[in-house]
Image (cartoon, rainbow, N blue to C red):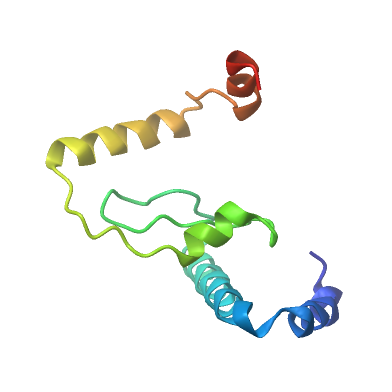
Length: 112
């Protein structure tokens, strides 16, 4: 999104029903916090930094319903076991190494 699109954002906000303003406010706060975090660390984050931290989404499209749902999701308050934490961390490491199946490939395999 170009820098000169702030006017477009203001216009879009004016069109949002009052009943949805809270969700937009939460999402914008989330984006602002992530931008500040990226400035501090110099890195973009997608996923978890560790198994004890919240899921973070950066560089998502503004109309991405999954990113919006994640931004508005409450924290998981159910404790995890050490084994679950190790499995989750191993999964993230595998993903970072490129060991995953692309969404389109999964869809083809299941016939969607």
